[in-house]
Length: 70
Image 1 (cartoon, rainbow, N blue to C red):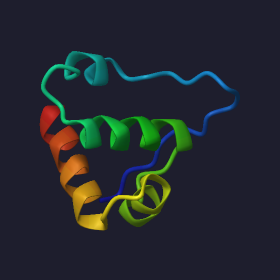
Image 2: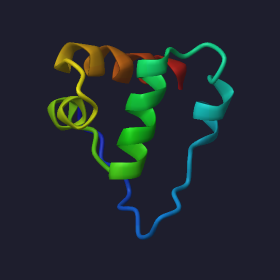
Image 3: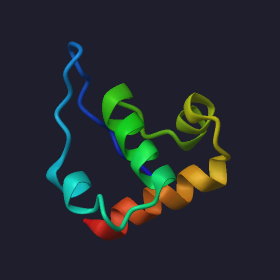
Image 4: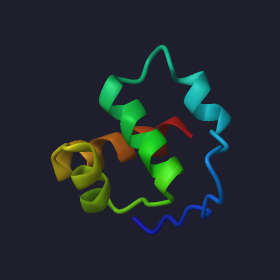
């Protein structure tokens, strides 16, 4: 996956509307992965997995969910 997120500059982050749209259908891990990726500006599955204490496979599946969600 070749995603690059904008670097955050402060304690407030911009959350993409799609995350709010999917609050009722996304799993807890999918939401955690999305918010971590946005907040930290990283879309590397291994780095996100280490940050959240998840497996790399779980993070990759969560990223696949968000790619499919739009």
